[in-house]
Image 1: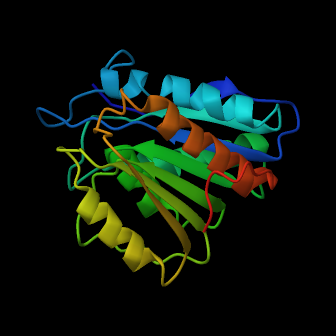
Image 2: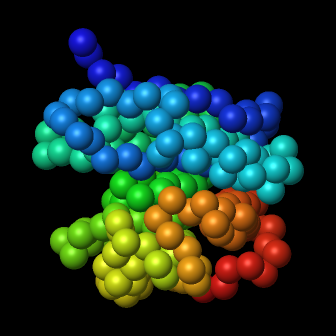
Length: 213
């Protein structure tokens, strides 16, 4: 069976000023395992997408990406799916539409590694699972990394180190959520509000002062 990504509308106004693509995480237990719309890593991004749409005040097109397969392998990664999603958004809204990528865990890694695309103005990585070799070369994009201090799945130390590496080519903010864990359950409001405010600020110029660079 051929595995294909899907782009799901959350809110698409008639004349948006920017677009946001929400990227889920989720490890794979076996090769080429398909993504289920009901897996927890997918479901936890739905309220974040809706929060971003509300923060945009009807001026942001917001989409959720369902990856073609779970996890991350050498042959096809979530970065391929994120770039596919960027192409679909460009087809629908125009190639000049500025985009913010918002991802959690491996989706956060994909957001950071896809932020080098010309239409991407900003990216938010929530509890990103990253490696020391992840070093995209950016061109002034704005980046927000948010990590829980008690995350035992994705290392906050690794994401902090990546933030430092990215500062040579991007405007980077790094926020630690004290007591936050990888699933973002206990402090979900904090993770979601930071993502929503940052997407709105970087695409629309609106700011509540939540995040500074």
